[in-house]
Length: 237
Image 1: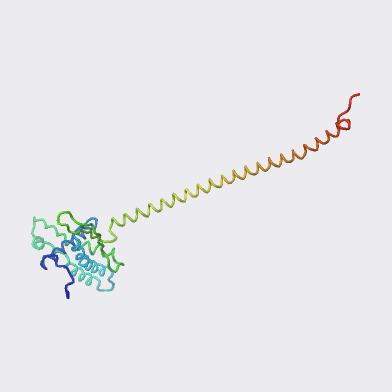
Image 2 (image 1 turned 30 degrees about the vertical axis):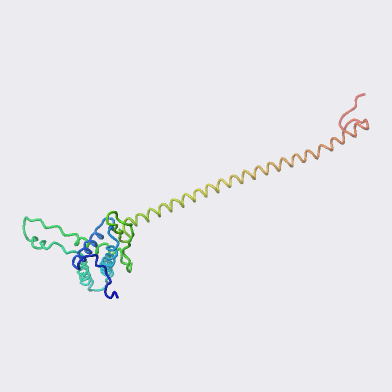
């Protein structure tokens, strides 16, 4: 039975495994696109590791009360355990004149970004800060690769904005086409109605003409049979 065997050893000792997870967490948070490519077992182990640190920053963003500063500092110190510490020689070189201070390590930058930016971003999200995509097998050792990324990253937000713009542009084009089609249909209906009315008038005029023509023909026929002149015409002697 697998009691108390919740995590993967990944073929490393405990110290090596924790150092690797810290490096992966630093790389994920400091990445410009907020995503890294690694093997699937490492990604699955990194996910709960880095989400615990993000939860601490989210708690710091939601603090209220008088002792907010002290509690936020305590949460920051707790989250610092998930990353590598800064340079130990920085303090020694601080007071020496003429010597440049050593640059801080990536772990310090990751901790700063975690509490300055990611805490506010995930302020209203109760967990689920990362997602994993499978990439298939790697050529060479046939290891299964995966992408682990932070949700609501800049690339995702840009893609959503572009999709909204395309959708709004498509709806505007569709509305304009429907309006144009409606105007064209109205003009066509008006032209059809005018043609129908003209045709009706022509039919009515032809009907009136045909009703008058037989009467004149009947009068002329009667005049010819009786030998009398037509009305309005005088007979010459």
